[in-house]
Each structure stands twice: as structure tokens, then as C-alpha cells.
Length: 54
Image (cartoon, rainbow, N blue to C red; front, side):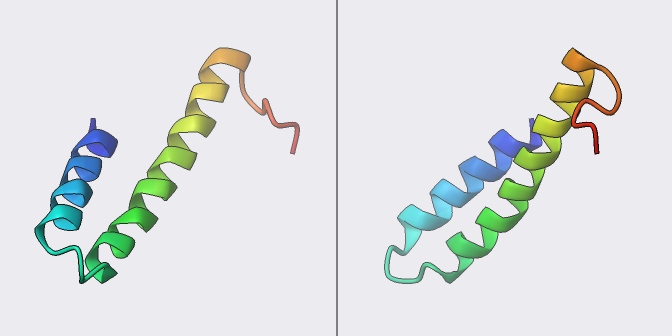
């Protein structure tokens, strides 16, 4: 849910002032980090603990 909310905020920022992309780019880093964490936890849920065999 947080990922979707942050994406909505990032889209709103991008459309408010297309010339200033710094705030939009700064929003992409936490979104990417949350997506990576979400993917990892989904893999653990589907394939069990230590599913990456690290």
C-alpha cells in the first residue's frame, strides 16, 4: 500500500512542475528500495526461508 501511495505522490510531483525533476528523482529511490524489499519478502513467502541460498 505504501508503494502505491508513494507512486501517486511521485506522479503528482512530476506533473506539477515538469521542469524541476529533482524531487521526482528523489522519490524514486525509496520506491525502488521498497520494491526490492517487497520482492524479497514475497520470495520468502512463496519459496521459504533463505530462498536465494546466500
